[in-house]
Length: 133
Image 1 (cartoon, rainbow, N blue to C red):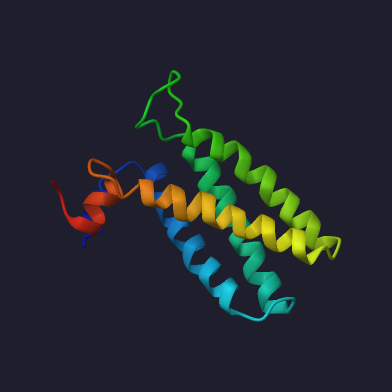
Image 2 (image 1 turned 60 degrees about the horizontal axis):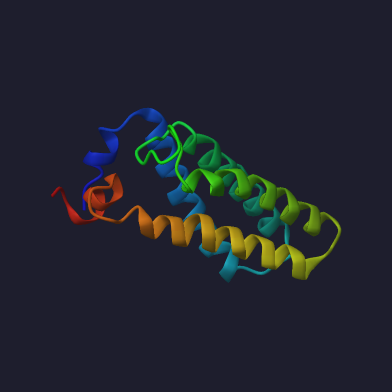
């Protein structure tokens, strides 16, 4: 494993990847930690900012071009901020179940599933994890 392939990418790709990795790590912490506490809320806000960074920075990445410069993954980048807003709104309204479902869905869709696709051969993260082809 080497970060060299990622560090050779443009800064927006690095920001995107490092924000996603940090969001993944904090998301795992959130799942394991007690809920409703000050640390949960603080880490949660940091996680939301990281996820907004991941979504926003994705609009500068155009490796897969199906519709002009865009790909289906960019639909997730539109959906994620909306879902994050809904999750924060649910938490502020003490709708714990809705908050939980929304945030787990964003984590699973935007970090787990989308993250697995970054490990496909030919992608930068594949080279980071498995070495260059």
